[in-house]
Length: 213
Image (cartoon, rainbow, N blue to C red; front, side, top):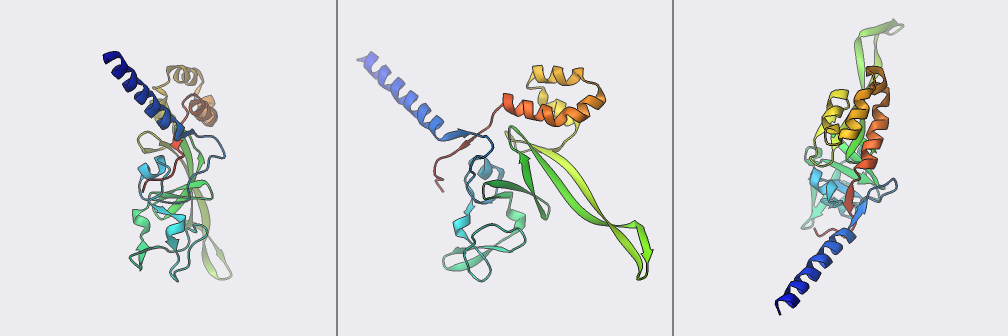
């Protein structure tokens, strides 16, 4: 009798594990993220937006067909139009592409993996090196580009530097040793390729089942 009970428990455990695997999909280019707003990093990792696109409205109560970061976002709660403050948002997914908030901007995840790559671009006016013209002093518009990567296990966002890179390669001694064999210039030029190799060796998975919210 005890053998039958143990066998039943084992079968249930295996079935549960299989069910969990069935709800997870290995990320690859073209993976379909559910469109909507993530209020937290966990929302993104669960592929379950806190506010789905179908629940988003414009100020005139028109249902949104896509997420436009230039517009104000609202949702209807108990027949009332509620404003969604950008300060409460971690990021959003629109047409399967993921964007992460950086202050008042949203930057697209360029490469998604265990370490996801992101580029932040910002335009500013340079008053120190402006030019004089017919209409007086004119500042020069300049673009600043800063690269980051996000650790998809913790949600930590770090600047895309060799030091931060090596810190994460510590989990993969083979890649770390290969990276250290290159000289400084080769490391700088090969960081993106090493990031790709790292993500290939350490795949990331997302739930693909229906959200339970």
